[in-house]
Length: 409
Image 1 (cartoon, rainbow, N blue to C red):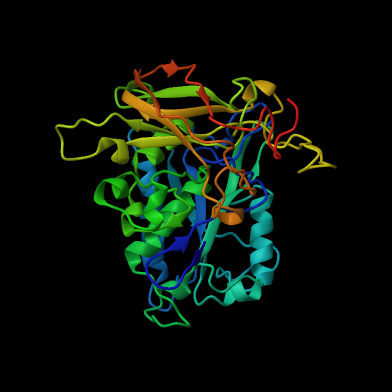
Image 2: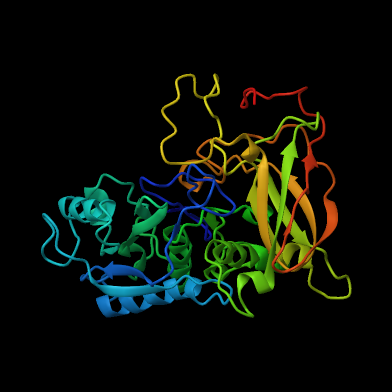
């Protein structure tokens, strides 16, 4: 994630080798089409740097803040994910002094993460580590899983936090975030660490956001637009609970259901990939709150499928598929959206063209939605503990069958 000058507008990103962005939910999909997640039999064990976060934030203060950031996700009642600080980052190779401060030390620690040996949280006290690594000094930090096992479960992850944004200096050469802003950014990053990708809901907030739109703006939105993103929105809660469902009266099955369907071209036969799909709660006009803006969750069509699948335009000589994403044709154009039980309308839109690379929603390449969106479908009623299938959407005015980004199915 990196900062932009002016008002709060911070680009947020995931990272690392296992990151195959799929958006609107899970960060990584295995070849069976299932999300990769951490095991929940025990808490996720992470280790922290022995140095200070910044010249103004001590090690003890940083540890407490990191625990609180993880706690935002752990405190979701309908989710079963939990975290525990196992101690300091362990010595490995060139790293022996407890404080990751050079590129050589970082490479050693990152290598241990890549081997699944430990999950380090690194503090860069003044931005010099980022410079040593050849990174843009405007990078605030990053996080994500490092390694997974043969069962498709993450076994390690990493985060790096740039303390220059917490050093008490605020000028054109040394931009500062408030404590709450910085922590909100890393709640987002720890969402990536936990296996969540970016989500696009209330995208108009980039140019101005009313109270209701702001309430529905996900923590996992690609940009940090407001400090309130340090608290989770409906989409964040629904997806962390879908990936890590808690049981009991307050668990996922007792509080949420799932909407599924397929997005089609105008012929009603060709499946459309990487269309953003949003389920918005039907608004109660009696209330002063617009629930369609405050209570919404999203998914991306075809996010389980290996998107281009050897397409002659985008991948004339594709690499082997590797351990990521399904090759099952049933997953082409398919979407799923977990939502709190209730009544919803379902709409579609293009992924914002600015959401690419580290800010991606759906993949590194943005595919414009072919044609135009139909009116929202529904309302549909979702009952807790059930999946409501068949919510298919046919786009209007698309090319006869395929667009430039999709090959024959």
